[in-house]
Amino acid sequence: MVMKASLQLKLGQSLTMTPQLQQAIRLLQLSTLDLQQEIQQALESNPMLETSEDDDNQNPESADSDNNDAAEASQADEPATTTESSPDWDESENGPDWSSEIDSPDTIPDDLPVDTAWDDIYQSAPASSARNDDENDNDFETRNSPTETLHDHLEWQLNLTPLSERDQAIAHALMDAVDNHGYLTSPLDEIHSGMMDESDEDPLELDEVEAVLHRLQHFDPPGVFARDLQECLLIQLNQLPPDTPWLAQARLVITHYINLLGNRDYAQLLRRSRLKEDQLRDVLALITGLNPRPGDTLDQAEPDYVIPDVIVRKHNERWRVELNPEIAPRIRVNASYASLIKRADSSADNTYLRDQLQEAKWFIKSLQSRNETLLKVATRIVEHQQGFLDHGEEHMKPLILSDIAQAVEMHESTISRVTTQKYMHTPRGIFELKYFFSSHVSTDEGGECSSTAIRAMIKKLIAAETPKKPLSDSKIAAMLGEQGIKVARRTVAKYREAMHIPPSNERKRLV
Image 1: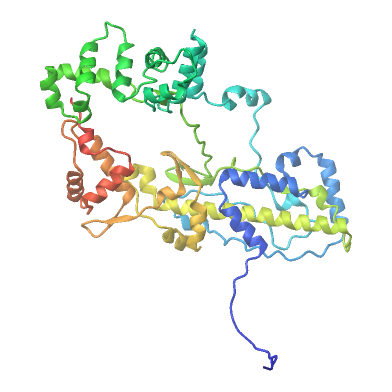
Image 2: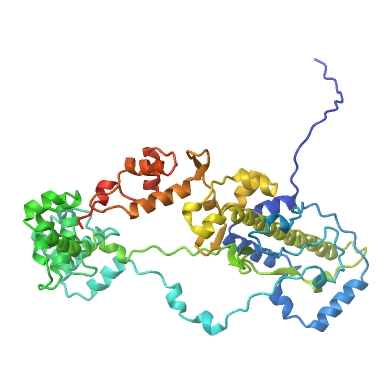
């Protein structure tokens, strides 16, 4: 077989992403905390970048001399910047009815001479005044100390309780079987058998384990070390003062009729307990004041703090959208280092400085592109959801990614990156940008209603229902139908479960 070489000419298209475009896309999808880490890493690795605080501390005379030296240096041949800049944004598009003036970020020209005075090109906003050292150190231990767990709290009480070594070992075995809610998860016979030692001359008795358990059940929080809900509530009732009103009746209900209470069968409960309705109401008020999960008072997860990327406020009857100035440090190019670059110098040091300068420009430009895109998307969202900002969730409009993508002339994938892990601070709270996107349900008039608005309506109807006769899912669907909203019973149940609202039989109350 003879191989023959030949030339072929093909015409095709391919998409090539430059490193600068890849960097811009990567910065766009970062959350606020990740962006701060990325900026800090860039400041540490690139000597051409500095924060505005560092630049403010610089001697003005030395800065001027550095700029003069840079101006006297000859032009160096720089590679052209290939980062795609964000499209221009006409603020008039926001509409005169709602949008106030928005300060867009400064821009850096693509062809920027090396020896340009950087203060004249890129002016960062002044950094917020840092708090003094005393305020930073105030209550440092409280803010940074780990939260006490339920096991730690029980261990602390056990160390203060006089027990023999034998009872101490039993107590530790019982503590190991307590879950985060404060309940004993293992039967006593299993704990007892696990501690048995056949070679022991004095074998451990089950009564000893029960005795230690009863002593531990007096620990704080009340109800801890209970084996079930009934025992947990009785432990708390037994620790109340003897003269507590309706204490005996509450013990009676918990001891004999807790199943009726759980099923909200108040008719049977009134008949068997021989209590009148007003008396049972007072008894239930005492019972509902108890804690069915005593361990939750201590084992609480650390709160997640959210830093908003966008701030929305109303000014002169118009909604103003602006970026949060505190989400990232202000960075700029170090003029002193930039002035060290010399014309027609191909040395290793000069080449290194030139490359770092170009990377610094690309990084700053990528940050600007990220801010411009985030601001445009947030502005369009606010423009579309003015009803929510003015009147609440019931006036939320249907919105999908393609709607915003068409408005800002970007791809849906870009909008998805912008709205992920980005938060907006509004007068109604802090919301992720994705919160404002929702599907729609048709109405009788041919319009559309947002699923978020429907959930708000369901929540409002349930809040106004009669506790003795709560609304069923079918009834809620019928009431929404009377308002012109076509929604099935299954949809109502799905929305109700998503809001963690129990069904009607569990919402029944005796009032």
